[in-house]
Length: 361
Length: 250
Ligand SMILES: Nc1ncnc2c1ncn2[C@@H]1O[C@H](COP(=O)(O)OP(=O)(O)OP(=O)(O)O)[C@@H](O)[C@H]1O
Ligand SMILES: [Mg+2]
Image 1 (tube, protein in one colour):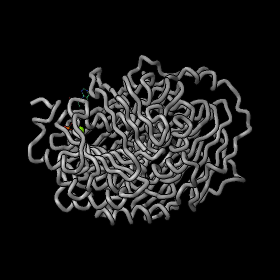
Image 2 (cartoon, rainbow over the protein chains, first blue to last red):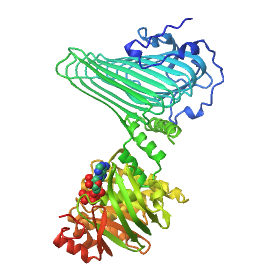
Image 3 (spheres, chains in turn orange, yellow):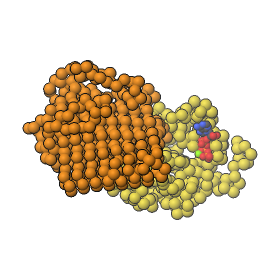
Image 4 (cartoon, rainbow over the protein chains, first blue to last red):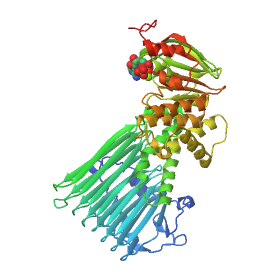
């Protein structure tokens, strides 16, 4: 199969480096997964394990999740459309609530693709945590549809040791419904995260954000769009990018407000922290507003660690490396703190800490 | 304890300290007074090892060790505490987390066991109470949104928890109301007025010296100590100002 990939001349792809993908697409997985025990977060609920995109029946307890076909609705997305129509789906009926669903994806090289479909009926509630580990190219596309007053929280951490992690979300958020997605990229592989969240009912809420932590020569790129197509909606996009060594971390967040989406309240906060001047951070907040009565705020700043704060910490006995880790942790804390479940939040904070120890201490 | 000889230092290419000689023994409290821009904060920062402050001549030893050869965090672990004229705000780091990390980092460098969370919180609460700092402030991010007085009380809480051998306090009294001044003065006395500890108190005002009685008072002007004396010198300065003292420009 020849792999058709977007070119770096394409505006939406210029910060990503997809150069490694053709070789990964041709390579075979080793089939020898790394240990996965430490990837499970200690919280009750269904657990699903996928190894190289294949469902591991013996080590999973799927609860309400179905394995089989899934329509990820990603035909327009250059990588998402490669995810196919095989994968998992979660459909919850009216008023149904699920315990936190954990999904672990382990890859062993080569390329693996998987689709997901999440459909919540009126007033249904779900929370999903996904962890991506191992090596190779892991490609995912997920489609999310939330009916009136449904609530979905998704937290994903991308911690592969090598390779490439791509994920594309497409979401339709109905009246009074709420979707919050948080992504933490804290491994040693490159990443590309996309989201197209569409607020189609009034008084709905959409949140997309997270932290991109990069070192070595990694490239991380998050590109999210929230489209307000109905009135009185609220959206939050909060991204924190950290780059060390020769890494490049990029985040583009866009808010589109349709003409009739009055009283929209959209906020974007993009912040970058350069740990060395050899690294790079690209931030691009974008607003496209056609309604006249809206409140949309955005900020994008890139900075370095505060020298005064570093000296203050040193003057209290804290050595340079832990002091840098402490300030970096504080910098990404906002993004991770938005995760609702305490167990998940703490697990993600620990993952970020592990990364900080690896790069800084 | 602290022995400074002919210390010269510059910052931003400008010579600020021009030959300071000062010896501080255990049990002593020294006050340094002097006009704005004299180099008082520069002396504190140079002794603390702040990046950007370069020693061009002279030496400083702390308990016999070469202070100037140590990294800032090593100076702290050796027992030096710097009270900042303008304490730094650190968003996202709670006061408790910061202090615990600081104390345990120092203990580790000294080869002592780290304190558990519970042990630490007990000490932190006791110090906050004794300095009149609301316990809620311990949970807030370091100095963020603290009033000037709260920041200075917080410096003293830190000093109480860290229990240094030598404290260099840069205008810890400025911006304090009378109650806070008393609390801070009381804090300095309780924490530092001990036979094996010493304080270098940088101040503009006699008021703090009413609470914390110095053994020696020095006048720093244009990067040099131009006069030294006992507590009566501070009163004289309060009455007559710096003008007229040798080496202070009118
Ligand atoms: N980063 C810097 N760049 C240039 N000049 C500096 C810098 N820091 C200090 N100085 C200068 O050094 C001199 C001494 O400053 P310092 O802050 O030590 O004075 P001070 O005695 O503490 O004054 P104050 O009583 O106002 O606190 C001043 O002339 C000041 O302008
Ligand atoms: Mg000063």
